[in-house]
Amino acid sequence: MRNEVRTAIIIGIVVVAMVGGVGYYFTTLDNPKVAPAQSTTNNQQSFGSAVNTNTIPQVDESQFPVAPDLVGISGYINTTPEDLKAAMKDKVVLYDFWTYSCINCIRTFPYLKAWNEKYSDKGLLIVSVHSPEFEFEKDINNVKMAVAKYGLTYPVVLDNDHQTWDAFGNRYWPAEYITDYQGHIRHTHFGEGEYDQTEQVIQQLLAERAQHLGLNVNATMSLVNLQPHQFAGQQTPELYFGYQFASGRSFLGNQEGFQPDKVVAYSLPSNLSQDHFYLEGDWQNLSDSMKSISDNGKIILPYYAKDVHIVATGPNTDVQVLLDGNPVSASDAGQDTQNGIVHVSENRLYNIVSSPQAASHTLTLIAKPGFQIYTFTFG
Image (cartoon, rainbow, N blue to C red; front, side, top):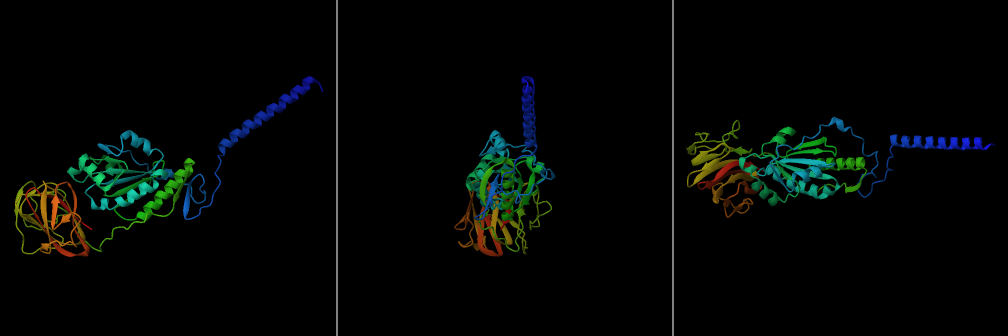
């Protein structure tokens, strides 16, 4: 064979091989590899590239709304704006809306803390959005006090003007919004309860995240085992002392009623109605609370519940607690009641009665001047 012909054949073979190789390369780009499935044992779910794709169905995230940005934030606790932004990237985020004087919010903390400990290194980030109900809850020092008291270590942001609250369209304390790693809201829950369902959603979204990001993260499928609060079949509703907060839901039983921004001399009627509170003595009517002006201002409340809490403040004021006309016993005393006395100094929630079981009682509080009360709440 002539050298020219042999050379031409060799060049042709090389060209064909190169074209075929390039074609195969681009074909592989259109067909990404799928990680092989692995079995799950010992009641554990494998999160990540090793997950069996048959057990984690593909989800069209576009059908879910994208969580709005955090807006109008006036302060940060346990984080900075820059650190929080970086931490949220590619995370399953649980937005927890709360306010620190809310007993319903406080009762969710054990679950939030447990989930944070269990899943934070697997892709979960809890963002605690503190949206205040009362003016004193806007003070970052008060919020820091509450964060330290309840041992919250995850990021807390102060939504003092409810801008983030409004961006989410939220209306409740507490409220949870959970997003997948791409920021789509995949689950919401309002109020207490349904903790198992919420944790199962967290596990599902962490599995999706690991699979999509090609991670190999393992987490147990066992759920946090805590004893939820046991509610009575019925109980007295929350009672507000501020004339603005009580509008449309007034349970003040005195005939004098609310008189905005005035000091009113209240007297007790002859008959008291269940689930209404009654004042005796001089009390200043404020928009969000009432303040005792008398040396021995009284509040009397016939109620039905197991636990009684007040949101209150005062200049180091001792408040006497009577139950059914007698000093509250040790078996009925709340965590903040010692020897029948509640010492009120900080702006916060105080547990004043905690009975063995829900029942009807008449509660009497005897307060000194300066004692200021916002609400009664029950459990």
